[in-house]
Amino acid sequence: MARVPSPVVNPLRRIRRVPRALTRRRRSRRPAPTAVALAPQRHPWTRAAGLVTVVVLGAWLGLLVVGNVRVPVGPMNTTMTLRPSITGGTKINISPLGALQLESHIAPVRLDVNVDQLDPERSQALVDHPERLSGLQDEVAQDVTRGTADLAVRSCIAVVTGATALGLVVYRRPRRALAAGGLALTLLAASGGTAYATWNADSVLEPKFSGLLSSAPSLVGDARSIVTEFDVYQKELARLVTNVTKLYDATSTLPAYQPDPTTIRVLHVSDIHLNPASWKIIASLVEQYRVDVIVDSGDTMDHGTAAENGFLDPIEDLGAPYVWVRGNHDSLLTQRYLERMRNVHVLDDGKARTVAGLRFAGIGDPQFTPDRSKRTGAEQSQELAGARLASALRDQRTAGTPVDVAIAHEPSAAREVDGTVPLVLAGHIHREETEVMRYGTRLRVEGSTGGSGLRAIEGKYPDPIETSILYFDRDTRRLQAWDSIELGGLGLTTAEVRRHLPEENQPGATPSPSPSPATPSTTSP
Image (cartoon, rainbow, N blue to C red; front, side, top):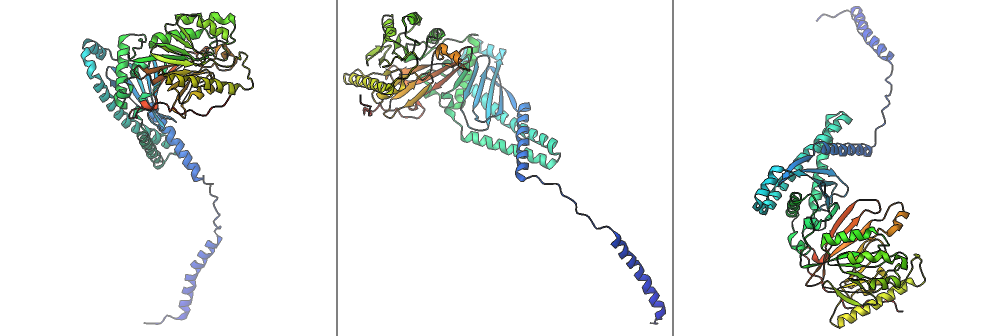
């Protein structure tokens, strides 16, 4: 190969180096890249809280818009809806009569069932063929099951759609929107699992009635059969709807309560405090519930003067025997006035009397404080009065005539009879309380049936009018159940009825033994 002379090669090398040098110069002239400031990133917890807010709000909007189903339940048209709730439970709206609330489950969702109206054709078919009522319960149970399944599917679609749509609006990213929809479905599934785990099929045993359902017991059955018949939630919801159907079909007014003839019904009132409206309420309850006897645990008056005695005259026309003990606002003058009245049984000093098949014994309040004053030694005097009543109760038991119900005005006196009687009634504190004491005696404290009387206008909010219906077995003379009734105070028109069962009457429970004969320690005189 021929050699190239060096004079030719050297210029060529210089020509090759020139572009490289120029390139290096151009690169060196470029400005150095500047650092770009990054936007501050939100804390992960903040982003998570925002996502949860979007999910909950979107799910709620979805349920609100499309999360309900219209279900024909027997002859009735109903709407079932899931609603966000802190306490859960089931609410059955029976317009225009009122509503029932059942503590059926604990979860962040509540089942609302709105009874919209009766279907004319299906209702007429029942009227024309009353034999179909016998199979109506099974039909209603199937309708409720089908409606619940449809509601579950629709609710899933509603919460996923709502959360996804809102996520797309807020984040404008399909992946974040889909994440919101998936989280909504997860939350709904977790809520459903919690509801299933905490489901209480026996919640229908203690429903809370509101509105005009003053005849609520006629919807859920009598006290004697309530334990044996109310065992399955779905079945009893069907029974409830069936009875409401009959109620709508029979009359536009509330029917009179038809109680079990084997039960003894006692209306417990207390602390009327000269409220004249109380007599009309008591008379209405006596007629509605077919009350056998009324028990007044005192403070019927406010000052106990002779001028107030005329207030007591309506007692003779209430339609049931009236058993009464003296309260700290009732004077001996009041007591003597009542003793002369027809159909009134005044109890004091442990005296016992059998009225309407139950044996009662009571003692009057040892104090007379119409000015609401507190005297030294008041608590000791109450305990001493309670001890005297307990001694009389033991004497009755020894004589073979045990007392079924004891009565005292103040709970501190009533507590002293623990172990000597199955049930003791009291008042005085103007609020409802119930407890089973150490030796087995149940203490039932009634609220103010007079809404604390005319003093109700002293406070910002009026006190409610409270009373209760007690159901006793006619054979054993033991308490089976009671309905707590609460009416709105002065100027209000609300009403609530709540049924309660003693623990021993709950399904599956064994009958409780009689109160222990052991005598609790009492304060010496």
